[in-house]
Each structure stands twice: as structure tokens, then as C-alpha cells.
Image 1 (cartoon, rainbow, N blue to C red):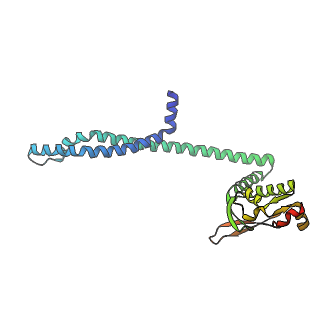
Image 2: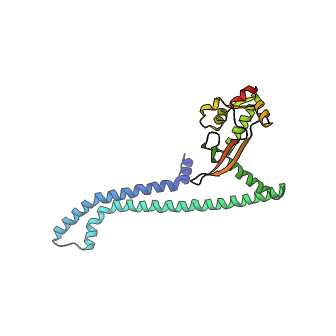
Image 3: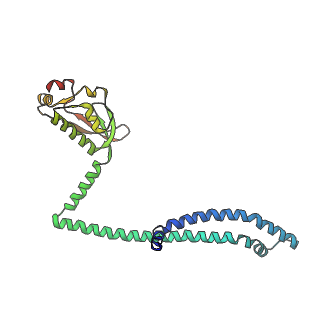
Length: 242
């Protein structure tokens, strides 16, 4: 238990001292306010007893003892504040050192990757990581058919396109609203009346799948977006080709 307590204070020492320092500031202010009336009363009594104004030394001698607890709390508060600052600097120095070691290890790793797998491999890995991150960031899209904007990730759009075409190939038809369901956006009123079938797509476009068209655009307020359309739009006649 002693070991765990020591470890806890080592990890959270700066936070504990900061909290104590904040409490100390409040306590010092409250105590000073409470002690002042007593000090004024003692000074007034001493002045009446002397029959003349008190010197500065006499005022400190009379009122000083009243403020001793307040001064002690104030000094302790300053100690907590300075202690927290010292611990923070120590932690920052440790973090800087750790970062330097990590950076050096990362450079050595990149060099070893290039040495084993060929020059430029580490750069290709970095580019792949950036591309993967971009795929999972929320982006603005515009559905040309329903004329509406929506936000999702590029990965989710690509997955929706795959799932719609998979359904089309597996069962020979797919509804428009199933496309919107895969995108997790509201369906449209006519979405269960129109769709695609492999027979219709092959006869009309010489291919048994749905081709999606993508293009970049910018909204009036300057936001970039990707528009999504179909090379072959859904039709009510698709069921005639089952």
C-alpha cells in the first residue's frame, strides 16, 4: 500500500500541489478577512491605552500575532505553487527527453525499412497512412439524384458503392433507397419504386453493374465537396427485366 501511495503521488504530484495551492489561496483570503476586525480592535485598544498614535513597530507588534496563521497558510500556498511548477518542469524535461529518443528510434526504423525493402519504401508507407487517415475523415458529399448534401467518410461511400453492386449481382436487382440506407442518410419517397436490375443495366449500358460518377466542387461559402452521380440512373422499368 505504501508503494502504491508513493507511486500515486509521484504520478499526480503536480496536480495535487496545484489543487492545494488553489485551496490555499482561497483559505488565505478568508482568514485575512476574518482576522482583520480582530486586529483593528486590538490596535484601537492599544491606541487608547497609550493615549497617542502607535508607531509602525507598535502596530506590527500588536496586530502581527493575529495574522500569523494566515501568513503560515499563505507561505504553504506559495510552496505548493512553486512545488507544482518545479514538478511540471521536471515532467516536461522528461517528456522532451523521451520524445528525442522516440524521434531517433523512428529515424532508425525508417532507415532500416529503406535498407531492407528498398529506398523510398518508408515514404510510400507514410503516404499510405495519410491516405488511410483521409479516407476516415468526415467530408462533405452531394448526391446529384436527390440534390442534397451530407457528411460521411470516403471509406463509407466506397463501401456503400460496393454493397449496392454486390446486392445487384447477387440477387439481380437493387432499390435506390438501399443505396441511401448504406450511406446512413434518409431515404426518398420514390426510392422503393425505382432501382436497377442486371438485365436492365446490361441492355441499356452494356454492363451488369452500377457505375458511379464523382467530381469535386466548392459551395458558395467555400466548402469543398464531392458530388456523386450515376452513369445509369435508377428507373421504374427495372423490374421488367427480371
